[in-house]
Length: 223
Image 1: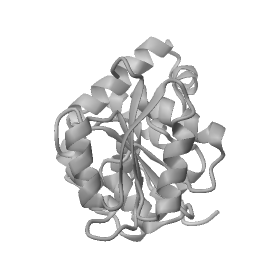
Image 2: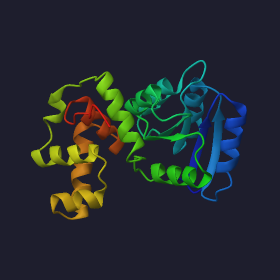
Image 3: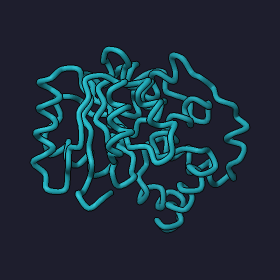
């Protein structure tokens, strides 16, 4: 983050939504909205020009949708974090955006306080993992159409790291992981960091997606 705080781009094809979010975010002293975009292609261009920390990305946009835009942004070094905006939680397109590299998602009727919190969490390098909704979304769509990446990637993990990844996918926080594994929180952070490094992942959301898609964690069929 630069001296002007958290730099933000808002991408949404509806002008009222786009302007509304930009204006709301601009009320925070540690936020600076450096650009807006009406479609995914414009979002990618604006991000390359303005180098934001976080992008609020609508999924359904003309020219280029939010999934493709997220994938293109995710493919470059020092890419901004992406928060996907959606109107309902169990959305296959949101799942695709998470798989493409988004750090989390927000419902469009989110409260202002929750929006501000989410932006700060993601800008700090953490994944926005709503324990119930995000995990349910990933599990549901991984069950419907698993992509099954090569297990050789997971073979790079030690048995303890594999255990940590499995627990991560269940939504456990660092303190909960530490308690379950009978280790300190710093040890947990080290394990998580090594997992992300070995698997070439940016954050915990990506680790959860991989855990389900690889078959390491099997989604529940009911409930």
